Length: 277
Image (cartoon, rainbow, N blue to C red; front, side, top):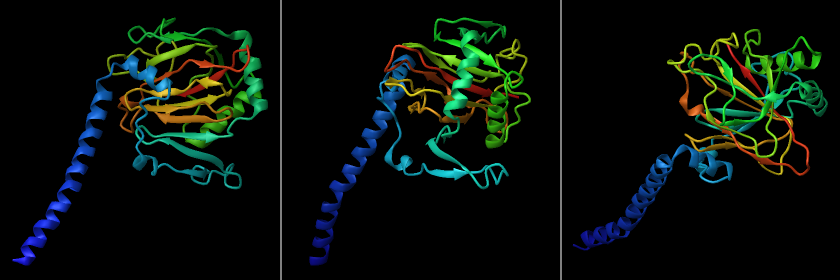
């Protein structure tokens, strides 16, 4: 009799903990559902302000930093690069101090006289055209024009293992204060067979994005569908795959470039190199 009473009391003490755990799970589920119901434009704006980021402490604990040599690549065995995980799904990594100040200045010098209103590839016709949701200027650079561009392209190839022979030219984008690029995919979907017709390339396997300046505020690359935000850090680059190994597009990579502010009156550049095949 005494034993039964003790068991009953113990169960009563345990019940509130179980209930509390259920409440936490329910609240977490409701928060996730609420974020999913928010219109994409609103999510984009929230993430640009640093709000609504969905990385939980548990997932955060599984992100690491490391010295990386891409399976003992001879160029990086003795001097591996610094690599850190930025996000888990989709998997986004950042390479730190991967482009020097001297290289950045060379890229800017080459790009400056060529900067023109940025275009997008029409998903239906494949024709390059301007769009109201992309406010920036851009220029394209090839490895034939300057040794530094060839060195940068080779570095990307060595670290990713992706051949640059079929890659697009290096695109340099100057967003200016308040410039932006609203949510978009870097890859062509199944119903867009001619997405990159005018560029003369295949679908974009992955994206490599250099950050060529530090900013006072803003400037993040955000992924509204997953609640991710990657912030600019001069001299670093972020990398992610747009396609799965089977060639299917990873829709979680839909991303956008946030407006930013600078400390001075001049506009800074943000450069992205898209790897394609």
